[in-house]
Length: 129
Ligand code: HEC
Image (cartoon, rainbow, N blue to C red; front, side, top):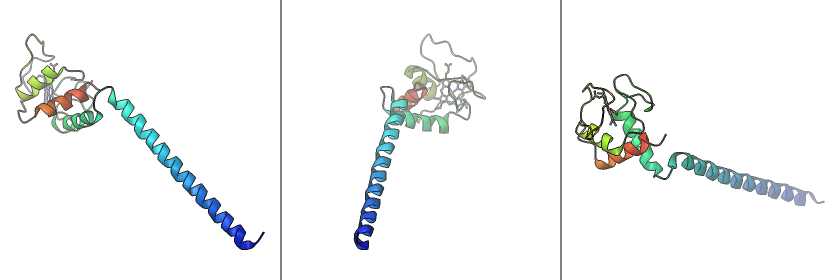
C-alpha cells in the first residue's frame, strides 16, 4: 500500500475513534444527569429543592443541624415538617393550631422577609430526604 494512502487511513481511523469517544462521553454525561435528577425529584421540582437547601444552609443552620433530620445546636430536627408549620414558625414565630412544639423554648426569631416561594422551597427541601 502507498504510504500516503496508509497515513490517510490511520488519520481517518483516529478521527472516527475520537468522534466515537466524544459521542460516548456525551451519552454518559446525559445518563448521569438524568440519574441525578431522578434521585432528588420525587414528583416535585428539583430546582425548588435546591433553592430550599440553599436557603436552609444560609438561614437555618446557625441553630438547626446541617442534616435537618437531626437535632441542631439550638433548634430541633425539622425534616418532614408540614408547610403550615414552616410558614408560621419562620414568618410569624407561631405554631399551627393544636400543634405540640418539639421544644418549649422561644429562642427562634421570626423571618418575615421570607416569601411564600421561599417557604415552599424550604418545605420541598425538608421533605425531600
Ligand atoms: C436563632 C436560631 C434559629 C434559627 C436561625 C432558625 N431556627 Fe428554627 N428553631 C429554633 C429553636 C430554638 C426552635 C425550638 C422552638 C423555639 O425555641 O422557638 C426552632 C423550631 C423550629 C421549628 C418547629 C419545630 C417543631 O416541630 O416544633 C421549625 C419548623 C423551624 N424551627 C424551622 C426553621 C427554619 C426553616 C429556619 C430557617 C429559615 C429556622 N428554623 C431558623 C432556632 C432557630
